[in-house]
Image (cartoon, rainbow, N blue to C red; front, side, top):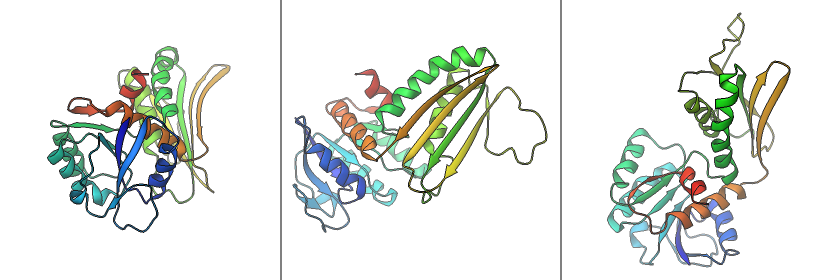
Length: 253
């Protein structure tokens, strides 16, 4: 049984993870951390992480970027592995994360979905076939109308997977409105759609002469990210110090 501390337990993702963990016989959330203890949870909740006295194997973090500094300080002090899911971290926080990883296990990924991370692995193989054959490559991502950043981090991670397989020789293009020329071969177009309540749709398109191959991932709820975070926690518990990502979790399956 992997014992987890849920950092950001009262947020939406914290509550989704709490619900999924209750159905998983291999996981027990033994404590939660949040800015306020204003929900009913099946575990004790601490408003200051340094007040948490509960023994655990790993922390799962889905909180706000402002809370990550204290989290990393705690993980360093306690040699506590952490699955870091909070996005929007500063360069200073990312540097601190790498510093902490020299002392304990840290897992960070642009997207926690098992499906997305398996797709990234498949795209590397596909890119070697279609890229060398001259196929055009496009990434189209769709999200809800409240998402403030574009393109999504996941779209960039998918593009990076393709580009890595092709020797990082392709340029990313986000806007063609000011261009009056045919499409260069060595580019990956990345387009963003914002509307409604779309959780997340990502298409990677390889367009050749008389055929189009499309890899699609559609998230219908945020539970896909919660499931991935729990699988990452199972993987990370007991691991030696170092930086890990979801590719390591997929490889261990």
